[in-house]
Image 1 (cartoon, protein in one colour):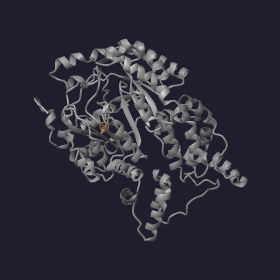
Image 2 (tube, protein in one colour):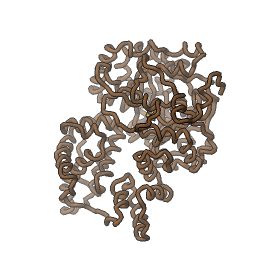
Image 3 (cartoon, helix red, strand yellow):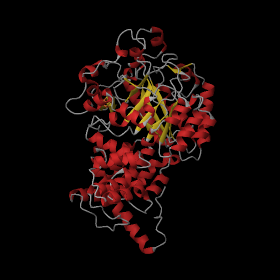
Image 4 (cartoon, rainbow, N blue to C red):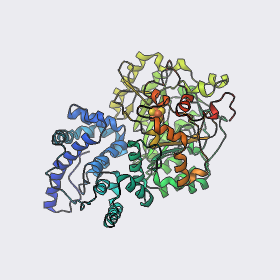
Length: 581
Ligand code: SF4
């Protein structure tokens, strides 16, 4: 896991010497500056280099994000770090197959963080004065500061070969655009516009614009409305929404894949890999959009070797809702499941993905009073079967009785409020502490709910241990295209927070085109969320999202109708009593 000697120096001793200095001082300076300028407040609030390293790890959540973060260091550091191969070596060192060693690696990197911390403090004190270290391969600066900024301090730095000539031409033609106009133009003109679109989206988020030009950078799109099992903690029941499978021809006609940066084939409540044309859809999207970070969420029952072979080095993130590690728990948690098939698939997963650089595999378990005793076994089962990260989450009891109100047979077939771990807090804290210790021994990353005994803050309707961001950027960043569980029709939503069943119905054919998606993305409900998600005039749903812990069975269930009254829009029909869909 050593960073190893500098590469890419072409054997030139003078250049190699320059690189060594560059790496030791300049890079540390840049990381230090980055930590002050661009990371979450939690990171720069760390009080020691060790804490800084650990907070960076926690804030990065999981390895792909660490890679993204390290890449951001390179991107935002002031000038591109050219030729040191640092990011590449870090990426190699932290590749998904090396997941268990990430902690050890960061420990090793402490030396760098220490230096970064010290120099970063100094740089901040000196008002970020330019470093005296040698500069390497710097492009000729533009006269127009906006273009320097775009080329050197945005995600677009990775497309500098395409971007720089374009900006030079604009400057030579005296076309000196402001940042917003330049980004809009780049979205339209760049052959691979996902980075310009992302930067434009960030710009519009910071400016809290309700009408936007950027398309959503992060899209979750169900390929079907159907699931092949019925988990008893989940709202899903067969035949609640019309059965549908998106045609391959429709996927091929979608124009906007090139603008997105992340695409998940699951928006929450269906099993996309059972789509009869899944292989063709996956191949088509992967082959034609190498820039996309592709994800799949699956319950594992149909995650057969053929699928895993398709995902080998081609899928970026694989989220497996395992939820059980033995037959008894599985049969209790899943209605109409198949332990034999599920466990066979899980046992084959590690072997099938062995040696792959991707996907990053995350296993999820919904935990309740009755299965808490299986938590350690769940962790070991997931780690044995190839998970890089294991996540334990609380059962969310409020949604099911709301969605299925009036259908007692459905409600009775699901878990209820009394199953929640909120009624067994001490045992829960004790068990999750043991899970964390065991994960360290196994060398697998783990996420558990914050201990009940600990003071926490609320964000996303959820308890958080870390400092929470003040602003919510979800209505600019995220689009979920799914089948609404109240409306029983094609409907979009914008977050995993408290906004649900928001009545943003869409016409699949109309949003196939770039202009159609942009028009829908600017529809009145979505604009209203952008206008009122932050600031003094916050809508009641977003305000509640920062106040209530939705997993707490004793919390008040919020009323989504209040949003529409607040923003003066008609309440969607699906909130009416006797709505038939
Ligand atoms: S409910 Fe509002 S504040 Fe919460 S995540 Fe969604 S948009 Fe953001």
